[in-house]
Length: 466
Image (cartoon, rainbow, N blue to C red; front, side):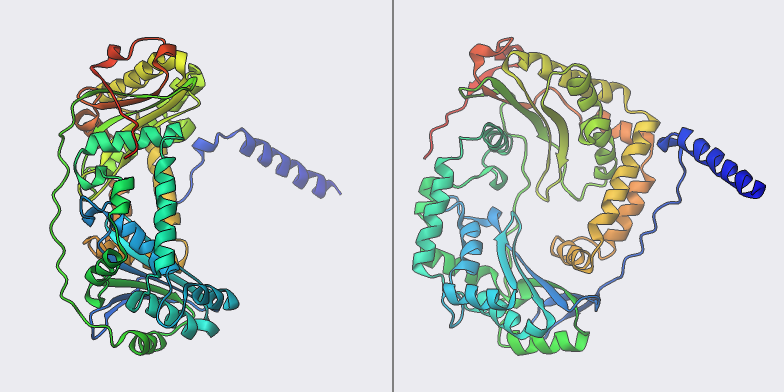
């Protein structure tokens, strides 16, 4: 009995001591990150394949990536890549009508998706192992023999035009679009579809776009699941062996350069709030400074309630519903932007305080404690980006598509860990800027606490939908 009481007492003392310890003072061993390296091979007709064998579930997941995408749209047909990608999936394929594709996939619980991004077209398949032949047959038909059903083309064009007509409804989306259009100017990153550009797109344009980019020597596949390498190679041979190389060579696209006129870009909107977004061009995604910049920015405004911008502008001053800043790294030049949603009568106060926070970090840097918290958060989040075989193998495929080294996934983690406080503060001083920037403010200027020209020359943005 006495022994039980003594043990219970020691346990309570241990719990009390543990409870008094601050979570930030706790010490944990570094997370281990030793991901499986996929098998890589190239088929006879040029498809590059990354594969991870995984028998935990009787499921197979596949993604096919093709270099191309939105930045290659002709200037008078912006939206072509996006429409092509959507109708690849919805427009029928091979001998199947659009409805037959949907029925056959739904009958076995499989899914096929398609989409475009700035630099690629992407198709995906997820199916049970027992239905892999049906899934591969439909995916191959979509890639090799899309039908581009006329009714589906017209429907998707109509839906896209309706979205364009409503593009000014949401103040946040509107502010975001105007910012990118202004900071990137005539560069493809700043181009958005219009009613006219969608009208210019024909069914034959979709077919030509498909023919141009969809070839085996322009395809990188990521496959994971309940297959062996031998089974996968047999499937690829059965469904894709007749697919011929085209020797595609994409044009080299120029990086974006600063061409905008610094100042305030006012978007008139009859609301009692002010939506703010400001920033400037930053760096490309292969710039080695981006590791330190991302860590510094986490402390500045990207880390939610732990960041300076949120704690000072929202929590302490109560000037914002949402506030923060982020770097967007892109192959042809990224941006750094800050954003805020506030009451109209607090517009200038919030904007000025955001400038003050940025200028303080630019001049004085962040602290070692802020850097350590940022590094820990970013590293932990980075590791969990690859917590499934499907996400891991796809990351290898995307990195190859973008021309990055094969070991990028592992070396990125090392580079985040190697960032020093001096480096964080060097990139803050070099890259952060509150002058010569684009400031977009959406709202009713009659309600603002100070005139917009307090912050620079004002340019009124037309909301005419063309």
